[in-house]
Image (tube, rainbow, N blue to C red; front, top):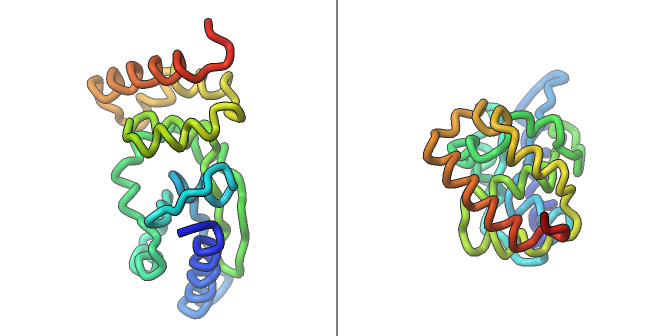
Length: 173
């Protein structure tokens, strides 16, 4: 899916939710991963689905009909503790307000996954990342440990982050 496809699915889900729910109920959804980078026009590659965090259980079944993946919650440990505070609104419909995770939170999660396509995505944003914030998120043990990251996962992340920073940080220290 490209940006237009993702936006179309976001709007279709919002319309469907408007038909399904009565009253003033509204939902917030945080889009992460490649979809967030596509929406914010940092990458142009297609993405297979739309990864979403913080899903209200009432939306899970509906979301799958629009290629929205709520299984990403299983990987919540790869997002810093307070990622919601840094989320940026991308579009607001009748019932759903959509956000994307910050570039720095997306970078942390992609470094945690350490997949080739994630590293390729990161190459597209290294020049616009707030490196001070990224360093804070990556090195503040409380940020990552509060989300139940195991000792081994934390150690693996630190090694991946060190390699990432050595390769891409514009100011080598």
